[in-house]
Image (cartoon, rainbow, N blue to C red):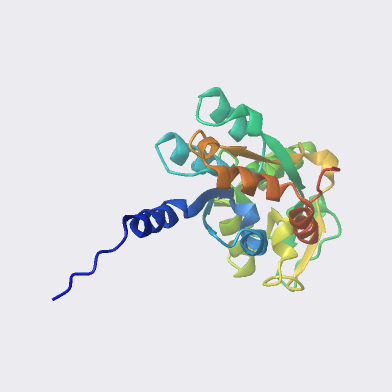
Length: 254
């Protein structure tokens, strides 16, 4: 019986191929959930050998997960404060921090009897018994809604109506399902194919809240991952900028 020996060079090549497989783990603010599929599909088209996994949630909750050891490479936040906090604590790479888009806030309703003549008139409308808002501590869109209501002099007045979502995605679900009569959600949600044309919405004037600058940063783990650096570069490139613009984000000039 002949014993066939497998060349050592073949084994080494096989091991090299396995080792070369790349992956990127992305933690993204909940407002991006509707745009992420399109973004990741285009990244996959450009980088077919890279596997991308994503987790979404309130920006503050994702920061807590990263601080507790969650293995994310890229953090997409709904503001700049949370990624800067990670940099300050030594858990993100300061050189990688960038603003890739600016979010926009809207008041949305799917109730036939709820009109939206203005933001303040709508939230004061007796037909609005439940007003949805994202968590003001952990979700930047919730914080923006609070700022707008405070500037309009209606924050204290609407307290009995408030229904709080853990993040902006849950807040959107409250309005979509009719469990809230109206709610403050991301423009990206009402422009998404799944919800576009459903109900009515009114954009909250930008001057009523601090800009929702969407910040991206590499975690300390991601800073050592070349594929994560390429994902960050893609997010700031023309293809991603086009997708983000289609979902209602304002993208910075390049």
